[in-house]
Amino acid sequence: MKRFRWGPATVTGMALGYGIFVRADERGNRCLLIHELAHCAQSEQMGFRPFLEQYVHECLTAGYPDGRLEAEAKQIARDFI
Image (cartoon, rainbow, N blue to C red; front, side, top):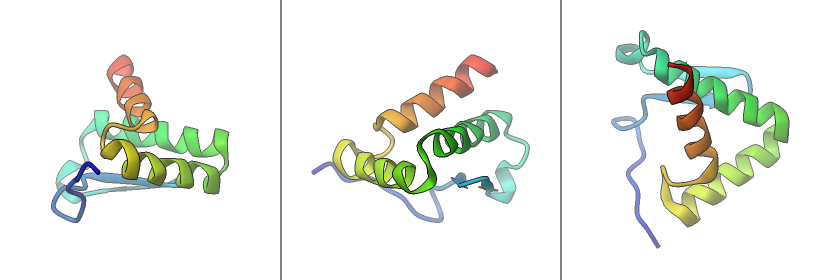
């Protein structure tokens, strides 16, 4: 199983439903905001619980940040900026 680092020191932002939480030193990071908005859209399209289950599953199997949902959010942010 692939290991990944995840915790307060490595998390810059997080989307839960329509809530977006951004670490204070990242608040001007537009790319991060778009990335988190993409996760909000994924959650809306899939439903909150199915999104969360899929996201956690991808983190545990593919490893963070190599899951499909994370890759999609990164691509949306790159395309937008």
